[in-house]
Length: 400
Image (tube, rainbow, N blue to C red; front, side, top):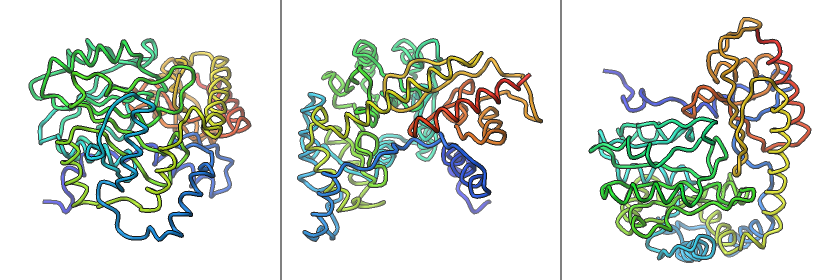
């Protein structure tokens, strides 16, 4: 009998963090590395939010907060959800956690028993299946490719449902693809869920505010299934607050209470100062924020820059992301090619080849459930993106 639990042995390490660590090591050795592997806005937190945090320190918000979050923060989240998403929640349906990842993990632990199946559309965020494994659940992946804008259909979900299905995980706008599901696409999925009364849906909407002309739809808007939807959001992406570690769920009282019970035993509340800062973010109408508008315009320009460069590389296929800050490029036409001792059989192989030969850090699609692709995070300067794309074009031209 080993010292480490089998649930941990079964887990895969985060490939996004692994690539970032590998690129950092090369950079420390003096290599000119361009890191496009991490999903983090390269903008500073807006001043009005930082001012609110400083005020909280001066007002001595330095004691344990309530486990589910300060009441006025949960009230502010309810106002945000009504203002931006036209869905109604009460404060006792909101649980504030240490980032959206923590909120998702709480929910999985709250609803999944050993052996329960969890449907995860692929490509997916790298942590989804591993979080399910922590709860001794069974990830069930359903596939979509670049030709379908990396979106699964309601029919695919219906076909994957079995008597053991307990949870479906949705993410729109998507990491890693930037795809956004339309109202009609989500309505069709909601109709499927409505016919299976024992299934819960996690709707991860963390990239909601980063969209380019197609406003994301909130999955909790479908009243027939609202009590079985766990809406997940936070401030990391849209308000450039990754380090503040604030996420939240909006859910039925039953599920919210279960998540509160778990959080009370595992971590208790999250940072009091970060919570105070988040009050300011929640009360800000995003349509009136110059900080947010500037960030979104910049991301859209970067998206277009990356797509224009990739379009010039033979054999690389992309969709046109309408949200987030990623391009998930299909490079499967290079499978079977080789250069400098590297043979490309997957996105992971390609990511390692590009990092080791031209010092561009990307993440192979294997980690996201699609080995045909590599993920670009364009949360960096135009100069670095252009340099990175030029290096990639040169490296791919050598593969024979």
